[in-house]
Each structure stands twice: as C-alpha cells, then as structure tokens.
Amino acid sequence: MPDPADDWREALRGKGYRLTPQRELILAAVNELGHATPDEVLAHVQAKVSAVNASTVYRTLEVLEELGLVRHAHLSDRAPTYHSTQGHTHFHLVCRGCRRVISVDAEDAAAFVESLTTRHAFTPDMGHLTVFGTCSDCQEES
Amino acid sequence: MPDPADDWREALRGKGYRLTPQRELILAAVNELGHATPDEVLAHVQAKVSAVNASTVYRTLEVLEELGLVRHAHLSDRAPTYHSTQGHTHFHLVCRGCRRVISVDAEDAAAFVESLTTRHAFTPDMGHLTVFGTCSDCQEES
DNA sequence: TTCCATGCAAACACTTTGCACCGTG
DNA sequence: CACGGTGCAAAGTGTTTGCATGGAA
Image (cartoon, rainbow over all chains, first blue to last red):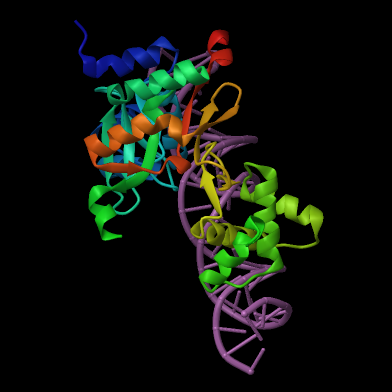
C-alpha cells in the first residue's frame, strides 16, 4: 500500500512532470510552513539546502497547485500564501485589526454555498475564499 | 436640503481635506465606470481633461475609500477594482471560466454573516468580499 | 540522448515615495 | 500666505519571461 506522503510522486508522474529535488523541497516547505508566501517558501528552502531560484519557486508552486497538492489564498493585499491540501478544505477569515487568520472548515458554509448555487447558478471555490473583517477582540477597541 | 450628489464635498471638508478638481474627477470616474482599476480610472479622467497623474489617482482613491465614498474589491489576481458606495452593499462572484462578475446584495448572505459572527466571533466586511468559482455556463463546458 | 526543469538576468505590472511647485482655504 | 495636494521621476515589491545549461527519464 502506498504511503500517502508519496502521493506527490504519483501526481507528478501522472501528468508527465519530472521528479526534481526542488519540487520535493518546495512542497515540503509549504507543508511545514502552514501558510507561506513564495518568498517565505524560498527562504525556507534555501535555509535547508543551497541555492534554489525564485522563479523556480513560482513555477513550481503553479505546478503543485495544478496537481492539487497545494492551494493559494490572498490573506493580504501583498503576496498570496500557499498551504497544503492535506486535511479538510477550508476558507480563511482575516482580521484587519490584528491580522489574525482563522481557518474555517468549508462544511461550515454549506448553506452559503447552497444559496449561491441555487440562487445564482454559481459554484464557489471555497478553498480560495478569504473573508476580511474584524474579530471580536479588535471590535471592542474601536 | 443637500443634494446627495454633493455629499462628497461635505465628506472631504468634514475631515479637513481640500476640494480639488482631481478629486472630483476621480470620484466621478469611479461612479461612471462601475468597477474600475486605478489604471482605468486614470484613462477615463485623462480622456475628459488633460493631465492627471497616476500617483494622484492612487492617493485619491485611498482618501475616497477612507471617507467611505468608494470601496475596492479584488476581482482578479491583478489590480483591484474600485466602485461607488451608492446603492446597497454588495459582494462579488467571479467566474474563473468567463471572468463574468455577479454582484450579490449583502442581505442575501445574512445567514452566512450571522454564522461567522456567532460561531467565530468575527464580523465580515461583505463589501470587500469576492468569491471565485464557476458559473453554470462554464461548468457544463468542462 | 531527449526534453523538461532550472538558474540567471532582464523585463514587467502595479504601487509607493521624495521633493519641488501649485493652488485651496 | 500657509500648508495640503499634485506632478514628476525614481525606487520598490512581487512576478514573469527568454534563453542557455543541466539533469531526469
């Protein structure tokens, strides 16, 4: 039986992509970091081994996302953040006050998804969704 | 009684900002264009009058948003789009297939807002929300 | 041995900033 | 006539691309 941790090898081979150390390192970095920008991934990878190029990080993250091994969301107005697709699909709440990020299981928004589907003939991609707003702690301060 | 179309004058004065032709033109451009990127606003303004600078557009949009006269949302991975705050607060659905943008009244998501508030102590800013996904027309094609 | 993947450097898209001049209040 | 606003140019940030070399299959 296949080790789930090796799924990425199958995924890459399945679409004719080659297995390279860079791809392995970058995927591992995303899994280890939680939510990381391309820059942070680059730094993390370079800390372990020597030189990996920024363009390789961008190109690799694109491939990994196409294969469904990672996903990205926009948690700030700056660079996107990538995260593993292991575990349940989730969307993000970002507090404008304290920048805190709350991950919410997509299941919790089933009714919202349903209403968009039936009332607007639209299937939302909840794994990409980021909801900006204010958490209760920051609400009180204002 | 004040003409609602002149509210922006009050809003600017209220916070000690000056009334300038650029600010009037840029606000008018946003109202006329519907959803426009800073670049599109610039082009629209320059079509009417002569030279307005890009940095003035950025600076002015920031001021207008602070005053609540416009809002911005991220309808693509590129530049943000600004829109008028006249009318009901709405959020956006963007189809990844055809790029179509559907505006949905925030009221329609009242239950979703409610659940985020009660279950996660989080007050979402629905006017900034963009939901990516696929419309029914593009769903069939895949 | 064949191409896909990488590194490198330059180009790119969008935005921000410093500073001198301009014009509103 | 003071000080906030603007234009301009340069710099900044994040990302993409063309091309030659390198390594997986």
